View 1 (spheres, rainbow, N blue to C red):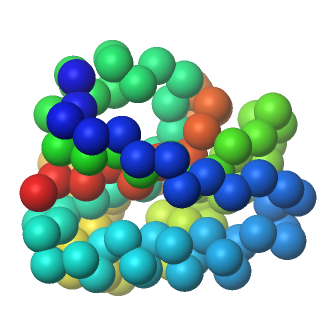
View 2: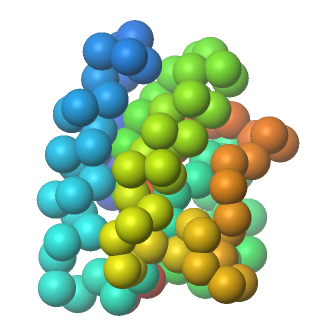
Length: 111
């Protein structure tokens, strides 16, 4: 299980909260102790932490709509991919968006 799970979640219509979500991502990943991160979705925190061995999970966005979660995840990945710490597009990283799980949209951080 992750050492820390932080809830910075934002709810609301996905198009209305994207700017605030982008700012939250930038705030979190700019911290000096974050060595790498990726953005993804999950409904099973324990399994995801175990699979990826991340040190910190930050809940960014909650919705009951699978489509909204997928759209938010996609936008955040596209916006964050150029960042040097982003592992979504890195070799061995998480790749693009996942179609298999919704739930919350998270930052998975490695410290």
